[in-house]
Image 1 (cartoon, rainbow, N blue to C red):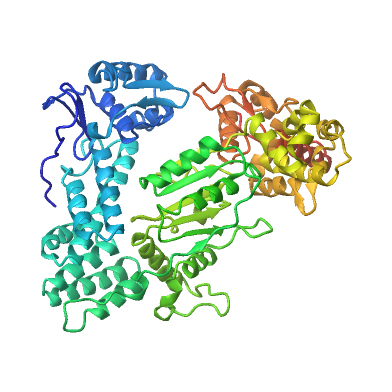
Image 2 (image 1 turned 60 degrees about the horizontal axis):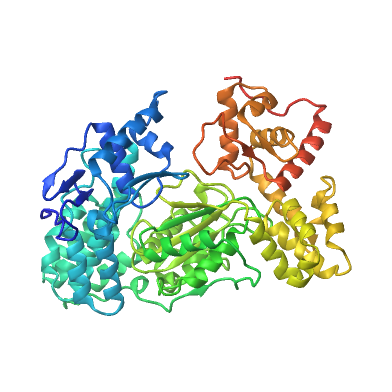
Length: 638
C-alpha cells in the first residue's frame, strides 16, 4: 500500500520540532531534518516517543537498547543519551519548560499533538470514529483517510532489530490496520468501494489471516460488480485456514459468503455482525467506595481516550481492584455505546474457570449466541463448546464481535496470562479491563495500574462510611491504629467497619488492641461470611511451592514486613542473583511490594503487606512443624 509523504502541518511556532514514528524515526525543525545521533541514542528517543507524555521506566529504556546483556555502565550511558537528546530537542513549546524530565516513574517526554505524528493519527482516528457513531459516514471516511495519509511506511522500520522498539512498532501497525478497516468499511457503506479495493488486496497479502480485512475486500469486490473475484477470496481464505490452522472460516465470514451467492450487489450482513442491543452486565457499585482518585482518573483517561485496548489493574487480594474496575465501568457509558460487561474468571471457591466457559459467557452476553445455529454442537445445558473446533469457531466469532463494536469488557480476578489469551481484542474498538493479583508480565502491550495500599486518609474515609463519622471522631487515634493494623488493605478496613457497625458497644481502642496482636489479627477480621483470612489463603494457593517457602522466610525478617536484598540473601541462604530472582518472582505475583521510584536492587526496601506477612508466618510455623524444621525448597547459591 503506497503512502503519500507525512504531512507535518503548519501548527507550531517557528523553530518547533516535529517528530515522526510512522515510517523511519525522524525529527524536523522548520522543515529541516535533524541528526538524531548514534543508533543507541535513537533507540532511546524512539522508545520515549512511542510513549509520549508518559513516564518511561529506566528498565524499559535499558531493555530497548541492550535487550540481552546490558553493560554495568548502562544507566550512565542512558544519562548521556538523554542529555544529548535534551540538547538536540530544546525546550517544550509551553513557556520554555524542559521537554524531557525525570521523575519517580522514569523519563517523561513532553510533547504536543501537533509535534508527533502518532498523536495526530490517534486524534484523527478518534474523530473519525466519533463521526461514524453520529451517523456521519462521509465525515468519518474523510477523517480516517486523513489519519492514514500520515503514514510513510512500516513504523520505525529502521530500528526494528530492537525487540522493545519492534513491539511498539507492531502496536502502531495494528492500530493502522484497524483504522484502514474502519475507513474501507465507511467507503463501502458510501458506495465508493472501488477506492479501497487495491489497498485491501495489498494488506490481505501481508496479513492473510486477518479476517476483517478479508471481509472488507470481499465486500468491496462484490459492490464493484466483481462477484466471482469476491467469492474466490473466500475460497482462498477457507483453504488457507484449513491448511495453516486446521479450521474453517468463522460463522460470520461464512454467512457473508452465503449472502453474496445471490445476484445483487448488496451483501446481507451476517447475524454475528449485526448490532444487538448493547449489553450492560455490571455488578452494582458499592456505596462504600472511597479513595483511589488518581487510579480512577487514570483508568477513565486511558479507556475513555480509546488508545489503549487492554488495561491491567494488579494488587493483592482485597486491595479493591474489582471495586475500582466496576466503578470505572459504570462511569464509561459514553465511550462504550455497544455495552459494558463484567465476567469473573474464577469461581466462588477461588479456582479458575476454563477459557471455554468464560468465552461462552461472553458470547451469550454479547449476542454471539444468536448465531448458535452456525456453530458446531455445544455441550447440553452448559452452552460450553463441546469440541476444540467449536471453541476455535466461538473464539473467532468473539474476535469478530470485538473488531466491529465499541464495548468494555471487565475480566475480573484473572489467575494467569493463559486464562485471557485469545479473549483480548486483536483489533477494533473494544477495550478489556483485567484485574489480577499478580502483574501478568507476559501480557503486552498493555497499560498497567498497580494498586498500592491507600493513604491513611482514604482508609479512614472508608472506615468512617461504615461506622459513621461521629463515632470515628470519638477516638481518631484509635481509628488510625485500626486502619494501619489492617495494612491499609481496603477489604480488611471494610471488614473492620462491618464488625464495628454491629458491635456498637466496642470501643475503637479495644478493637485496635486486638488487631495489633499478631496472633489474633486475622481471627478478628471476619464479618459473617466475609473473611480476610479466606481471601489471603486463596492468593497463597496461587503461589508456586518455592514462592510460598520464600515468602514464609521473608515474612519472618522484620515485624513490619520490610526487608532489604542483603537480609533476604541471608534468610534464604542463597546467592545474591538467586535472591533477586526469588524476590522479583514474588513481586510479579503481587505478594511483595517494591519501591515506586527507581532504585538499585541493593538499596531497595521491599515489603510483605502486614496481613499477608502474618498469614505467611502462620504457614511457616505449620510447615516447620510438619517437616522438622527442614527447608521445603532449596535455592541454588548462584
